[in-house]
Length: 196
Image (cartoon, rainbow, N blue to C red):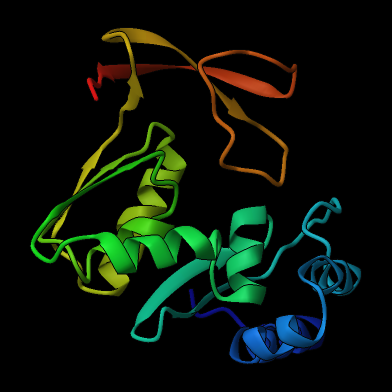
């Protein structure tokens, strides 16, 4: 992903790198909500665009992650450094060294990548082929080999069922077994039964 960025994209990347570095300082002085609103004014991921920023950026100090700001999840990583930082902190605090981590709905590997530095084995379940391929690319970027990829959804039933994937939405992480809108496309997906 070594494409040339235009001036506007370079400025946006510069702003994002500053906000990632100074994130805790910014949040300490402004509320989280205000910070997000300001960043949305600069670059709103929900706004329909022909082109989004695609880049490989630093992630969790010693990792890299390929992001596309057309996804809200990836927009948060681009500007804040993490998506769901409280879950990232939980993983870092409670995941046992040499343990097993199961990432249900792994998306592009936001949590799997961090867990791969701690656990001996990660099982990433991601039913959407596009997300699974990007997760694999993120693992290749970081030479990560302890993640097993399964193109499956977790359920209380086993079998093949329709799975609905959002077509034109900024929230790429909302796939579901329940069709609740016309903007979802149907795909057949295997589901495994998970007993907890």
